[in-house]
Every structure is written in structure tokens, then in C-alpha cells.
Length: 156
Image (cartoon, rainbow, N blue to C red):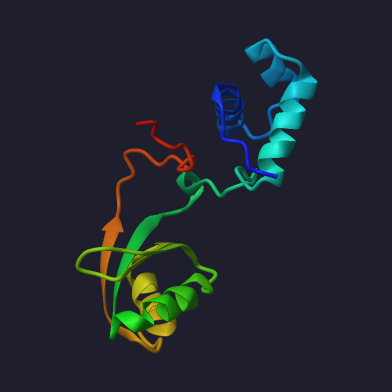
């Protein structure tokens, strides 16, 4: 069965869920002028096709002193990039791993409380991995906007 592309109604349903994942299907249906069954079946289809995943997330605004750490990783040889990326993806404290184009091969993102914690984390979990040549960190210290709804695709 071919996956259906998200249409305008799907996107409106997702907008409602993005604001409050616990919103009732009945409330979404009332807001959109459609039936509750339509909302329920569309959400079920989008989940079963892997187009959406409904989950709870930690609110970083409630952390004591959150510092978003961008860990840029350069690998020894480009052939090792997949292996290093996979090893980083297995580290539970890392929330994002992506292979990049540019100066560094991989970007890993995690939250830490302070620079000392970041240093301990780097030395214990990352710099010792086979294939890691060097790392460089950038720290996000003042969150102007932090929207977990990164899955919102820009329509071009």
C-alpha cells in the first residue's frame, strides 16, 4: 500500500496535536468542522505509515541551567563516518546525530548543565570512540526560540 501524502486536513490535525498532544479528537474535529471518526482514522493512518509519532518530551525550560551542546565531530577517514555516527546514536544522552556537509563530518546534540559536565561527557563518551579525530563544541546558552515541532516541513 502506497503511503498517502499529508494533505491540508492532515496538517491542520497535526497543528492541533503539536500545540497539545493530549487534545481530544473531539476538540480537533470541532475546531476543524469534521467528524471525530475522521480525525481518529487520519491520526491512525499517519501513525501506521510512520508519518507521525506522538510522544511526550522534556520541557527544557524547567531544567536548572540547560546548555544545548552542539558537538561537531571530525572522523579519521570518511569511510568511518557511518560507524562513528551509529556509535554516537547509541549514546542515550545524545538526542540528535546527523552526518553533515562542510568542515565537520557529524553533528551530535545533547543537553548539559555546565561546561564541566560537557567536558566529562566528551572525554567519557565521545573522544575515545574509534575513528574520532577531533571534536569542537558550540554551546547554546540563551534560547530565543525552542520549538520541538521540528517536523513541520516548510512548503516551498
